[in-house]
Amino acid sequence: MTNAWDERKQALENEYFHREEKKKIERMRQSSEDQTVRQYCHNRCPKCGDAIEPVTFRGVPLDRCPGCGGVWLGPNDLQILAEKDHRTWFDKWFRQEEGEAEEEIAS
Ligand SMILES: [Zn+2]
Image (cartoon, rainbow, N blue to C red; front, side, top):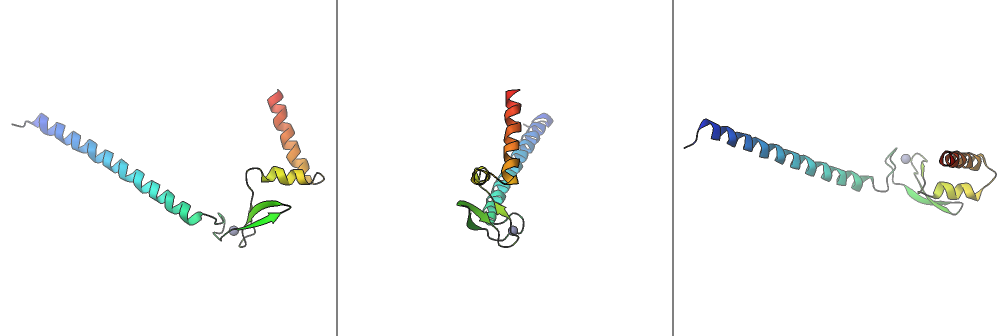
């Protein structure tokens, strides 16, 4: 025989599983959404959505957007480009940043 307490326990249990299932569904939805976004954005410009194309600038392979002219650099490309030309403001700026970073480490 069930009493009010057993019914209450059952209701709480059902509620718990319902909540857990909802969380699981939300996680699944989020991960499939992420996958879709990655799939559609792969090799696309984050600004205008055009397909980006690989270009070589001073021997450094870069990605350029034909739509808006944006350029993407790889993790070391900025440093490689700066080291290629020692007379530009670009290099001065970059070295200044490095110098500041080294000072911070030293102190
Ligand atoms: Zn673009």
